[in-house]
Image 1 (cartoon, rainbow, N blue to C red):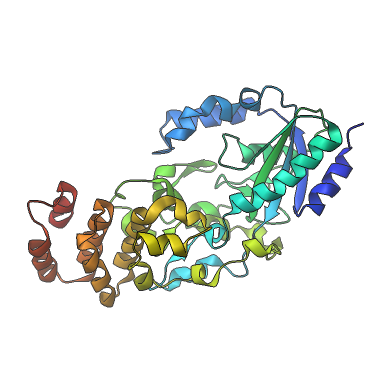
Image 2: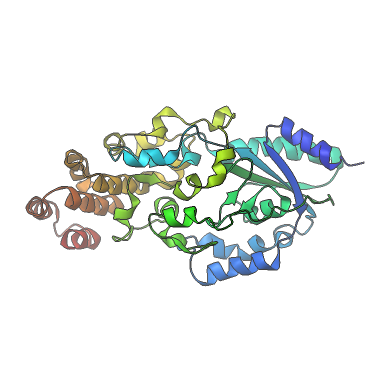
Length: 369
């Protein structure tokens, strides 16, 4: 006889999860319609994988036809301070809370494998586990399971953990009585919408990823639009603004998971020290961190934009050194940063020095703009 819900829940707690709920392996028609509208409007930007996996993402039965129920788990990663405080220190880079420690995919998967293995052995049913790298609409599933609700910023909000929950799922070929879904408790509040530096929210519950700083600094592979760069401040990997201002964070608490405790060297790193990273030192610094996956060129592009926004003329030397970098992403960002920090005459002299017939068109255009 398979274990009942409460036995499964207790075991999941024993494996280290903070919240465990259950739902059917289905998504609502409204959820599917929202996904397709988001993709049809092109709001996903460069994230082609979203459209390529749309059918599986929209319907768990397409992803795995045998799935009947979903065990949705949450892991608290609450920070020990307000991450927005760092935005006032322009000489330092702001890395999103979720990326200041060991890659949460690894932490979650380790725990999920233990839960899934036990569940398969105890029930005899087939199971599959997923973290957010798979085409699973985990936030709608989490809401129908009762972990929280998708707030106006489209992220999950929990009455117990605020904004700070990592999600994981175990799909199982077994009928389990679903829990009650969570209602929407945003009310008239719009703090998350109003705080966005780039006005990425088209409306409540609707985001244009192409303007989102998390998308720009992590997913976007090309040059960041000039009109958006000044709005990014010192955010060099992700953005926590809409999460951090949520009033429900008053109920959140600091994570007790050692692997999710922020590393000191990733909490408030100096931009000057980050700007000198070559590929090897970048890989060493971000070993085990999700930051590593974007690669050194995109990361230094972000660092240079933060340098350009710093207003600190002393950081201009960091940008000048990178005018001859191998990456055009870096060179263009270095030009922009220098032009923000040094007088026009100095910038013109640097342009004459560094732009040659061998340099690419993007760099020449950036100097001329």
